[in-house]
Length: 130
Image (cartoon, rainbow, N blue to C red; front, side, top):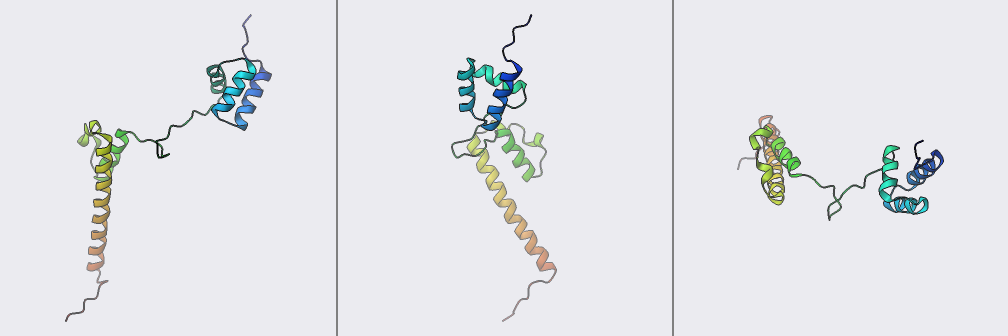
């Protein structure tokens, strides 16, 4: 006969408690109440499909971004194939962010020039000759 760690009733109590307040404090309290480890409770909640992994945030509270994602953004902004910029992800993250932001500023300025040229061609500007 198999030893049952969690009865259906206990499982339901754990799931309901966690769904009401999905945080690590709830997991710790459930572990203490039911005489289990926090890992055991997390494992059970995961098997039941309700556990929400804590999301990591940076010091500023933003979701972290990988160097690979920054390189992909740079290649997108420059309309380059990612293979063209292969190896760029080995650069320091701060340098990649600076390049991405600079490319974004330059691209935005270039778009303004293109819009100005298009308006100029359409005759949207009247020049007063002195």
